[in-house]
Length: 192
Image (tube, rainbow, N blue to C red; front, side, top):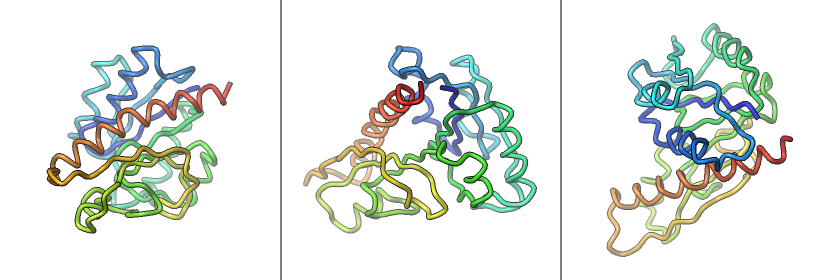
């Protein structure tokens, strides 16, 4: 199963996927390309480290979505990779129906809450401010409804009295780093 990862930031989830691949824990999955919409994203540094092509793709002109020429550019570059699975790992742009339809059923997203609770931006902060006792992370299929696609799997994280927003964030990230590679490995076995 050929995997393309899209991300916008540090790349800690992409690193977790690539580390799982190196350790033989990604099933039949193999990452073939990393793309980022941010030219200085730490995720791009993972390319040379893991011997995977990593490329910045200009998302202009919009700050929060892919549309128009940028959307066409992304679709074309991703299609050239012949992906079986596209993983959104901290990709901070809303995908429009044209993009989603180009890769129908092949896009998954990682979200830092137990959906359907706390969709959208800052899922961890939303849970923290609301005072819930359990939060976590979700891997789901991508549909035009933001964070509304069918849930594949979730990992719960208990919020303890001694937690701070920083410690909770670290706990949710650790859960993400475990869950996302596990889901990809399972999907790769189904793909065969």
